[in-house]
Length: 295
Image 1 (spheres, rainbow, N blue to C red):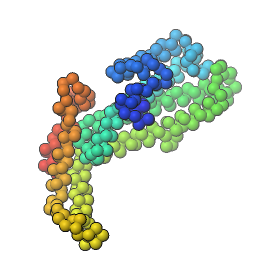
Image 2 (cartoon, one colour):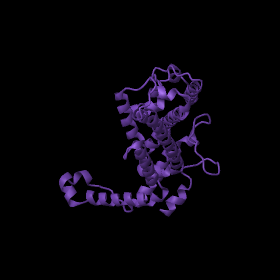
Image 3 (spheres, rainbow, N blue to C red):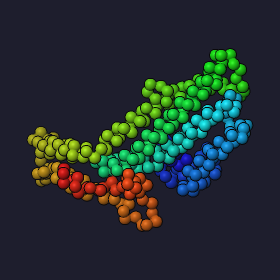
Image 4 (cartoon, one colour):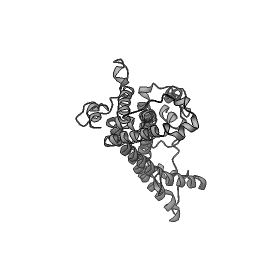
């Protein structure tokens, strides 16, 4: 999908839309608004084929084509949905949050907290769903293939090769089973993002910037600095009497970057998908004046 290409390939939205995906022309040529529906319909179609015992092109090993292995097929489909949801979220909205963070640092992310934190919660739920589905699928694979062979039970063809089994074991170990698995690492990063963008960190961020400016001013006006650069380059070096006030004023001006979507025409998309508990739309800059006064 375009989001997956943007996430893993570093392409822009336009470039991602122009790339054919896995040879699936229907998905590659689908309109942006209908792509998610098309992917989900493809998963639904595969689920229906499984229910109708149409396994010829399924790629499933023999044991998982049996009626009693319904749980394995269901876990497989649920994992596919979770993967698509995560690629959509991480390659779409998450990249825009990252753009704000790259441009405005911790301050920008703190301002976006009313949007970012609900988004992170959804991401965590999707990661946990994928983890659960893969763990259930792995249990089915262990029972149907690994334990069956150890019990001397005949495993119906087609069966994976030894190399396939080895690679699958390594992959599931990295993804969800191992001590330092990818799911655990991603959940840790999401929690760190939530902590770093907590609104209560704003005074600390301002103080840190103030301290940096004070130290920078001392360095730029020191005799040792002048010895290295000469007096002519900084003959009229301006003094910042109160760096904290300057920083706060500049940051308030930079909020215009976060409010550009307010000026968009009515037919343009806006960042209003996330809402608060009462069902109203969330404004990440709400209460700005109050917060700045407290700082």
